[in-house]
Amino acid sequence: MTQEIHLRPVAEPDLAMFRRFAVEPGLIGLDWTGFRDAQEPARQFAANGYLSPDGGRLMVAVGDDTAGYVSWRRGAYMPESWYWEIGIALLPEWRGKGIGWRAQAMLCEYLFHHTPVQRIQACTHPENLAEQRALEKAGFQLEGVVRAAEFRAGQWRDGLLYSRLRSDPS
Image (cartoon, rainbow, N blue to C red; front, side, top):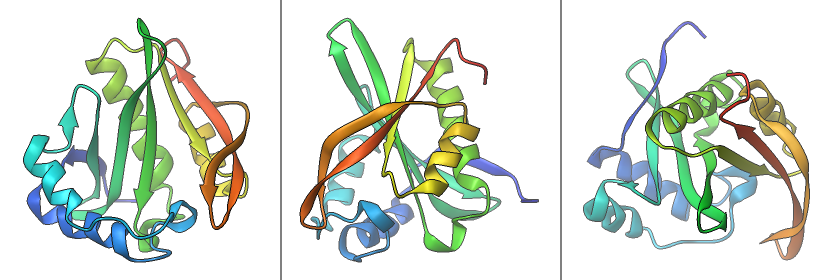
């Protein structure tokens, strides 16, 4: 990858990509869970530009091109010990190019720098070997299997839970 990868805030033209992820089966890969409200991205953007105290999205850009987005949302095991759960969605033409792990590592650095969180976690599908490798390259460690974590393609499926702590090497 010779072009620079960077994260940037969501802009109004990015909403077209979010609408595509909501209505194009298969575009988001294994994370497709059925049709979604295609107008929700515009409402969310109008409400807070996809940046709030409880989570957000940043666009993944390669040079001047938009490759996808990263997201985070607040979770908690206890009210005083919350964590971020992150995710990524890349357009198919940008997958397999080493962008995903870099974008997720950059998001972790951003969140550790701008929030007091100690833990960032991510889940993926057992069959998504590329994402498992990407998370490990981004500094995450496999914690284990989350049984029956999601309903997808007509059945309950397991997930793999990864985490990265502020004290882990970047």
